[in-house]
Image (tube, rainbow over the protein chains, first blue to last red):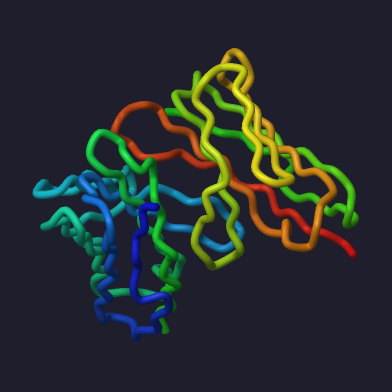
Length: 116
Length: 111
């Protein structure tokens, strides 16, 4: 079945630094990648949607200059949290969708970001 | 925008008992996904329902989508400790917007 590999699984960084999270589709082409954030005991909230080769579309309230999304290839999308602050500490998870909706929505295993 | 309401928010069930989790949408569902998550981990896909009246089962878990495609239920029979976790329903609007999730149901199984 479809697999999305997400790295790192956990990361601790200092305030003011940037962190990059990668999501790779291993056995299919991810034409669309969705990035979610989940705060403790809350549901997943969609942050942005990216299509390969296009600029990402951000949900209301999500700062595009802070959360940089790159989807340069059909198998790789990255989320960079720039100038991270403690309030950015959260669980970030990606979801990939193949061409024509094939493979449904395949989720990565998530990244626990802690900013200290 | 589409909203999903899950109930109950949390559930404590004695091992061996049956339980049901509900998911109600504010709009007609194009597709309804059920996932299980252990806190801080990724989502485990359980089932996807698309047709009104559809019902699917996997091991001891059964999910149904009502005829109007606005409500789904997840039923677990003879619950086991391995069923503990957070159950999330996700709605597909049929567009390119990804899934909209309910707030989840925290399931605890008591031995």
